Structure formats: structure tokens, C-alpha cells
Image (cartoon, rainbow, N blue to C red; front, top):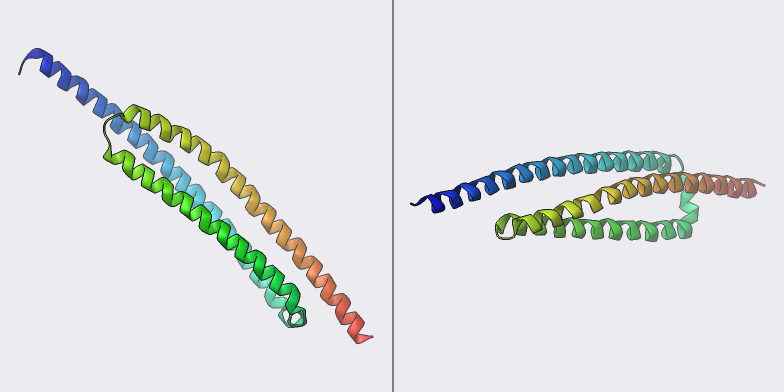
Length: 159
């Protein structure tokens, strides 16, 4: 092996070391994003638990309001569809990441594209957190209104 070939191998090895370092950084960022997603899932679970507790308290009174409850179920189906859509988007991201790991040629361009995409996901996660908080507040207000309406109906029925 001549000196020029050895020099090329050394440059390739240096590039591979930098690639490994960048991949380590990306893995750390992905870990952080996973932790944030876990936090959002925990918050969403807490909101669901709170909503369930409130529903148990007014269950008997809501039996007479089946039509209104059907409308809430339709909205819940819309939320489930939105969550399913988010799952598909995350699945697409995972496939793109696997394709990146398989391709060595053009690695710098691929790394820049992933860095840009990660920068776009973080604001979306923050926005998603805000949307979850807004949904939680909206559901609380709706339950207050439902409780007030049920009380009015009970008063009218009692009269």
C-alpha cells in the first residue's frame, strides 16, 4: 500500500469518526425527544384520569343526555384519528432514519437534512403540549357546562 492510499484510508477513517460522533449526538437528541414524548404521554394520561373521575361523579345524570354524549363521542373519534395520524408521521420518520443508517454515500447532506427535521419537530412538540393543555382546559369547561346544565334540568324536573 502506497502513501497516497494510506492517506486516503486515514481521511476515510477520520470522516467515519466524525460520522460516529454526529450519530452519537443525534441519538442523544432522539433520547431527549423520547423523554419529552413520555412526559407528554404522562400528562395526557393524567388528563384522561381526571376526566374519568369527573365522569364517574355525574354518570347517573348523564344517562338522560344521550344525544349530547353522542356528540362528545364523535369529537373523541376525531381526536383518535388525529393521534393515529401523528403515529403515522412518527412511523415515517423512523423509516427515514433507518434509510439514513443504511446509506453511507452522501452522509453529510443526510445529516444536515435530519438536523433540520429535528429542529422542526421540537416546536411541534411544544405546540402539541400547548394543544394538550388547551384540550384539557376545554374539557374541564365542557364538564362544568354539562354539570350546570344537568343541575338546571334536575331543577326543572323537580319543579
